[in-house]
Length: 366
Image (cartoon, rainbow, N blue to C red; front, side, top):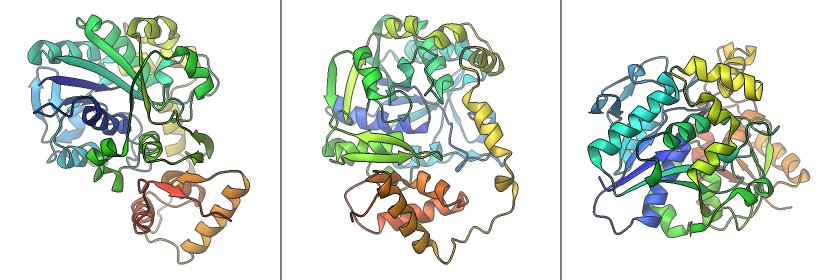
């Protein structure tokens, strides 16, 4: 395979990796190899943390420590994952990035893939830019996954050939674009509607927020979007669809968390160091959220009969806060809906046949 793309964060980065391939390597006559976590939000996967190979049936070995996730792979209950469906709908080979052996394990995975496939290019892609954190920013919410990827790639045998790319600065709602701008390098490309078409089918169901906003800005959306359960406001600007290169080793040298986890051999060890640097880890947050009483109760998967009225009330309140858009996940969380209702909201939004991804809700004006 000519192109190896490492999706630095969660499952949404894997979707963006497919769009990156369309933007940069459209002339290639073969799909990419995309190395990615299977790490979904609790609204999809009720089990906190990333999935390991043992959490699936039907994986295919690529190297001694890397497994491909085909479209026929099945997560073992109670786990759930969007990655098999992603593999079924896109032409690329998706390989499971497994952090359970720490950053050293991820380095081994990258080394095995580069040694076995000798790709022409190796890109590490992060949507939003929190991989460029220093580790002490108060707005950081999910630094561990990116820090592990950054540390692993910086220490890989092919590190000198690895290009770190940041798409959609600030769109993940963690580091603001103003903070990221001085840390960015040259502009590599700006995503367009043509690039979005490469992943159009995925956008009708995939719940990623940052990548949904990346594609929405590529399609022309501008304004202020509320994301996540807390309703964080994320500006949608002309910077949204841009992709910038950053020096890999400079990013690693500036990231205290990446340096702290670089020699870890287990995920537990990496988490402990994350707690030392950042005060907590995103898996701690997921664990705490999974234990909230509202998630423990048996919930009727049917949507409430007054759903449309609840949506209209949310839209009006969001407009008063200055928002022009909201992610479907934000809407579901704000209305207190169970995970089963997420797809219903996505289908409802898609039925409007508007120009944006189905997971981005455009608030009516006035």
